[in-house]
Amino acid sequence: QVQLVESGGGLVQPGGSLRLSCAASRPINSFYSVAWYRQAPGKQRELVAQLTRENITNYVHSVKGRFTISRDDTKRTAYLQMNSLKPEDAAVYYCNLDPPLLTWGQGTQVTVSS
Image 1: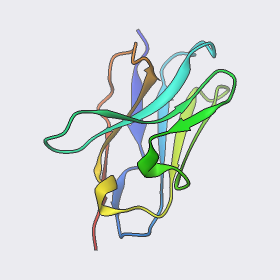
Image 2: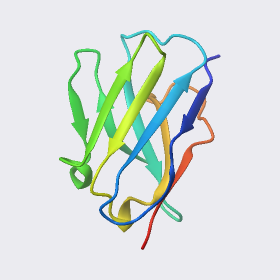
Image 3: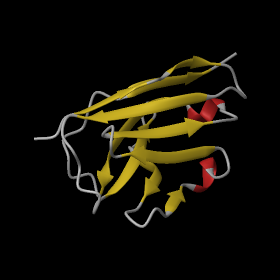
């Protein structure tokens, strides 16, 4: 079973940036789309960004133009570059496939506050 470990979260002021990383314990077949999800308190987990095997990216409307998803299969790592962060971006961020076929990791907390 592949284990996912997210990191890179933290406290940032509005307008700031963070780069999240997601390391997989074993190689993931590039056939699958990689995705980042987030879950804010009291809300359902939502898909934020997706990177398909054709290297096509898709984003939820609220983060378009601010977030960038990427992957480095040689390092078994996916990334989410988050710029111009807003308070409403605060959540626990998770990576997985799309659909989320793997066991969820512990996530990484992102807090956006002045």
